[in-house]
Amino acid sequence: MKAFVYGTNGAAITDVAKPSPKGAQVLVKVHACGMNRADLGMIAGHVHGAAGGVGTVLGMEFAGEVAELGPDAKGWKVGDRVMGSGAGGYAEFAVTDFGRLLPVPASMTYEQAASLTLALTTMHNAVITVGGLQPGQSILVQGASSGVGLMALQIAKLKGAKLVAGSSTDEARRARLSECGADLAVNSKDAKWVDKILKATDGKGVDLIIDQVSGKTANQNLAAAKVLGRIVNVGRLGGTHGDFDFDLHAARRISYIGVTFRTRSIEEIRDIFTKVKADIWPAVESGKLKLPIDRVFPFGDIAQAVEYMSANRHFGKIVLKL
Image (cartoon, rainbow, N blue to C red; front, side):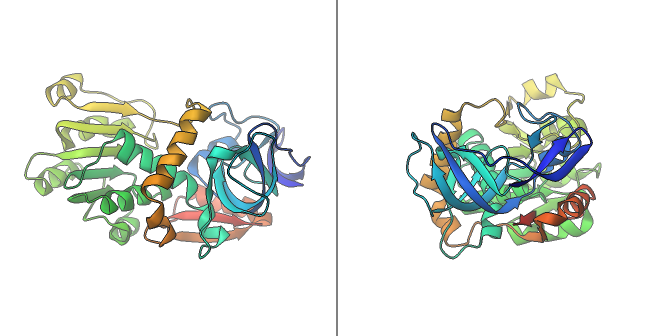
């Protein structure tokens, strides 16, 4: 089968053996793949958790049809339309655990479905399960113009947040955050962005910050969160290290929580997918929770798609079509 593989001379489409599902795995005939920022590091040869390195079939998100079931896979049958996450998504066939799949609604295209899995699971977990957002509370999403960021805005609005704020350093993308539910858009490179958040919250700060930037924004986040607020660290687009005001953290009694799929057990991941289906699935089926697709590339043009994503000019998701 054709797959996008990282080799000794870099990443390229090549022929590899079609995988076979083992144990609780499901084999999916892939029709579309969602691109994610984490892919860029592995395409450059970096390791992402246990994934990456020479011989790695790249990609983490896909949609297609169930082609074969492992002996312990449950809940699916051959021919089912599914979207899912797991290693090796940039390929004609991919395997993943049965619990890392979601059904594709009848009205949804594979391209739309391929954009959703990681955004839905990551941000339902971060905003609702870990972040504990309640109706009437306020939230700030740092790095809100990414696919997962836009989904966080929508989930917050769906769940009755009183104020939904999002950040983007790009003026054009910042202007579009309202399309996905933002009541307020700020520029995290603006020295006065914290003041804008405090003004919008009567000086108190937000109840919850979903942080995909980190780095130099850490102390500003502490200042923008209310007393007994929560900060959920999802990404580190602005850097993995930065100054941290421990005194401000203690004075505001902020709960600071880090999340990642990389260290979760398969049982934990299955639970996240189950919670998505139990809590917000009607909004997915109705199209209320959806992501703008910036551009769709043919799978054979994946090099151009990588270049386009690396330029960081897109709003929403970039999708590959097989």
